[in-house]
Image 1 (cartoon, rainbow over the protein chains, first blue to last red):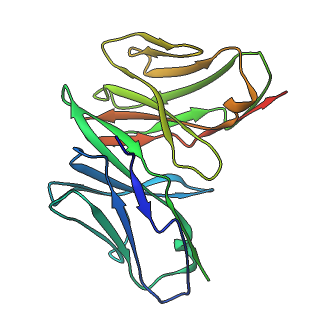
Image 2 (spheres, rainbow over the protein chains, first blue to last red):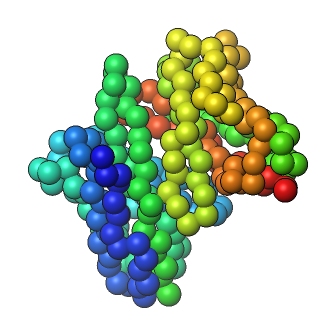
Length: 114
Length: 110
């Protein structure tokens, strides 16, 4: 099976702009989670979608939003970009086995805000 | 919520030696403990995982041990090789809730 794919891989934006990142999960996986990774903060959970519904949400401001489509592909959007939004954004798709989700990560989108 | 602590933050070993990374968690409801390896410029890759009904699991040179009573689990890498150099993350999970440690940067010196 193909792994999790994320596009674009690299992005440069300026403060105040908005950005949309895309994630295609592993075929058959219905859950998609998004994480922000920075050197100082590690992996910070943004949100999780399952069957087009947001199932969990982390402690990020409303500028960060997401959605999931009927084919399980997901997008996340960041509006009014700030310098501190520069990070690696990781998407993970998961499937449930015996009541437990197993997550597989994509390669990430590296966002630089100037 | 769950709190996962990971130690050490950096670790250097000679090629061929063993490496051990330890994690503790706070929520006794956590029942699944995966480990991820992240190489430079890549996303984290699942390398091994263990469920709470198992005390130890091995896969070639890597093994994970779990002590539910003490709420800690460890990753053991034997006969380390330069390609093992990466950042390793532990996680404690319940269902669809994943809580990650802060990572350990492992360097294997040839």
